[in-house]
Image (tube, rainbow, N blue to C red; front, side, top):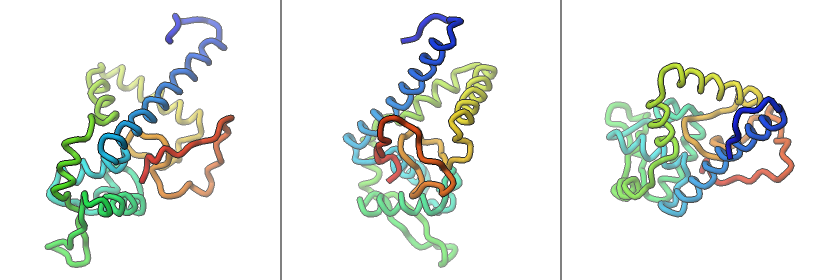
Amino acid sequence: MFRAMTTDSNARMDDSLIALRRILRATELYARDLAHAVGLTPAQLRVLQIVGGNDSVTPKSLATQMGVSQATVSALVDKLVAQGLVERVPSLQDRRQTNVTVTKDGHVRLERAPDALQQRYVRAFLAMADWEQAQLVATLERVADMLDARGLDASPVLTTGEIRASRKADWPEPLAQEPVRDSGGSS
């Protein structure tokens, strides 16, 4: 619940923590709903959407578009191949290269998938004035800095849990009071 602007820094701090928790909770609920509706994580859905929007995509191109490592993409594609939603096919131009294509089942799953949380965010973000967009980006980057999250591997996929196959070796363990649960957001 949003309170009117106050000069009490403890109340503002509580409001900011509540807002952060709402964002985290929304991503957790979306991931759960997505898994229930189509059996995919948000990251898997994003891979399927990118591949589905093209005839075929290279893993390198997927990694670039998602802003993650090729190893992460490989793990995501492996999961989708195992479900029969995408397949790896040899490139017609370069025999050393493999492309990823969507199967018929993959197209069906895409049609059944609920509207992605990040797509709702993008629509609302694009409806904002330029100055509001710039202010929001600056504020979110500041929050990321406050949480020492600047160096984390991230993609434009709103999900909880890790998008990577493993943690960065130099990233400290969370200081949360409650145990950190992996919601399955990356595989």
